[in-house]
Image (cartoon, rainbow, N blue to C red; front, top):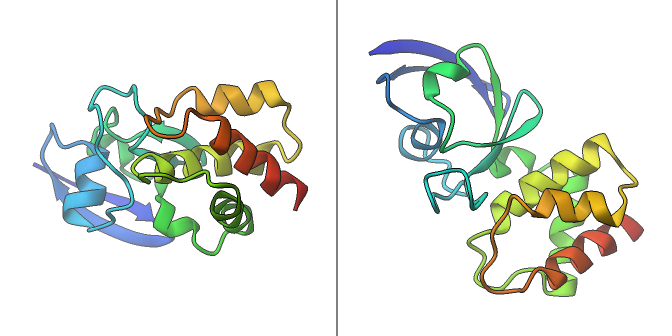
Length: 152
């Protein structure tokens, strides 16, 4: 057991963590930030995507101890982010959400891309979506939603 200090959604958190605790478990179970979902547990589906020091990561693949002195942002921490707000509005308008399970990871991934690259190519958008599995939409409504957000 070790104690880590991590800034989560702008707030400094001190937490006791087991050596095998994942960032996903810290976020969901200890901090009750449940937008981050557990899907595959092997980094393939993207449902658990969060930002760690500004980079999109699968929180199921990161040990909580690796987050000591890091900054972690979940979808809840992006509520006031103008990029995320545009994306959320576009997802509603363009039907980019069906069951919603993948949506938090997609929004976090898309926010990370659009924050770094405000005018991405379609190929860059497809690349960022590649890390997020959606079993409902067939991806086109998600892509359409992101492109709609870019135009607004």
